[in-house]
Length: 495
Image (cartoon, rainbow, N blue to C red; front, top):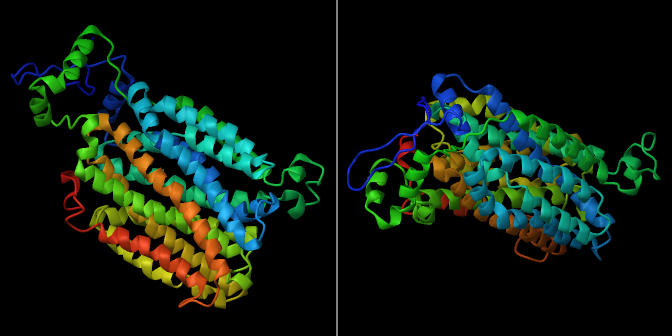
């Protein structure tokens, strides 16, 4: 295979320090790496493809919350109004349960066959199963379609690895922040789609009749719109460059054979010196990686439970200490707060990362989030425009703090392993995170239902206990950022 300026595959032979470099002109990973090394410019086009793919994968999650309460009510599975939150929690949980089961296999798939096939299959699953969810006529159909969507949408882990591989090291923070900024824009578009397009025959009778498909399936329109956007994203994936290295000639195969014998030879010590990193089976012993993943899991649990509780609490009746907002109100609040977070990530966060590093704002964001959430139950004392303004402002700040924490956790994870381990490492991260996120909506729904049944008679009203329990998760996460639990990767020290 002719030489090139791409990434070499390095091996040692016996106890000698000799190494061979294999370059692949036909290898898509080598081509992409040469392209990255040849220019110090930010790869805006590649970042755009990443952002679009992440957006379409996030929309089915974010669009659900404005209308979930009403969907469960219309499916007539809850016997009492206070039980709606209980059943709503399990609809959200099944998506993350499916993702828990499939995250590591998707990471292994991405490390063997490439990031691009994984991304394409994930987008196709959004098109199919998100559409079927909108056509759900029973509670169990909604549960099954959400679970299958989570099972087959394996984009989250590989796309983070992809974002760190498609650019230079100095641009990795921006690349990974775009993954989370897609969540921010999904917080703008998703709730707007869900809040304004659900029940169209009821909201827009001049445009949609009760006999039309959108009248018979009142929650199909928002899902259909998202599926159309995902179809466009799937077409855009044609231009995605592959970043995984494929070396198929005899020399590379011989080197791969040597690498396979690492556990039975003293190549392991040499490869460690050459920063090849630990083998995949030892990732769980990498404490820098695992401490970052556990932090990510705890704050993901908190963020998911918050979103579930907020969307249910905002639309529930004031007699149960809710805010009595409509689905459009909730969609507007979440959309505006998502726009605020997008502006923050694009205009403010880069300056924070430049002057303080991506890690130092972590703890202040967690502390401010705890203080803010303490004030939420008292918003029920307000009405009208001032309530909507205050709720929107609080939601913007809460999501800004969450975005700061999420970016830091992602950077910590990806700098704790080598490139060829990132797919599996992010797969492990997504698996554990999805386990926590699977628990979060179910636990939040159960706790919300309990709080609505205990609005008085305890040492605190039920809604205050609800947000207190939510804050305890943030407190736990904050405590875990200190030694001896937390260990910074060498690459991020001083950040």
